[in-house]
Amino acid sequence: QVQLVESGGGFVQAGGSLRLSCQASGNIFQIPAMGWYRQAPGNQRELVAEIRQGIGTNYADSVKGRFTISRDNAKNSVSLEMNSLKSEDTAVYYCYADVILPLVAGRWPRGDHWGQGTQVTVSS
Image 1: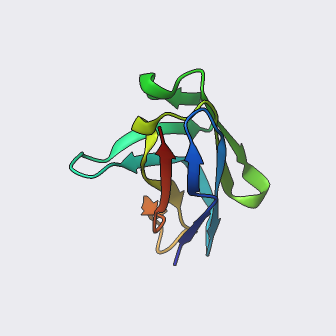
Image 2 (image 1 turned 135 degrees about the vertical axis):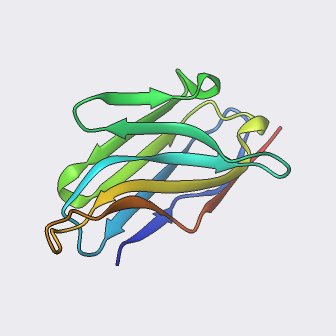
């Protein structure tokens, strides 16, 4: 079983910074991709940033130049450094990981896993 545990959300004034972290644990063979989504009240969940092995990073246009995603492959963790925060960044932020589990019966089980979410509130 795979678990993702997030930390680092909170309350900050506009223009401030926050850092989110996410740690994956469990019987994991490989994690080809990790990233962050967010969901504000009344809105659909949207991609914020992701990092894919062998490909690189991808950011939502709304956060480019302000957010930076990074990953520690040895620790199966991903972080999101958020700077110059705006009120429209207020949302619940979810960590996700595309996980490949160890070989079972000739197959490599693979699927997306999600964290429980962490609230980020930016006051204007």
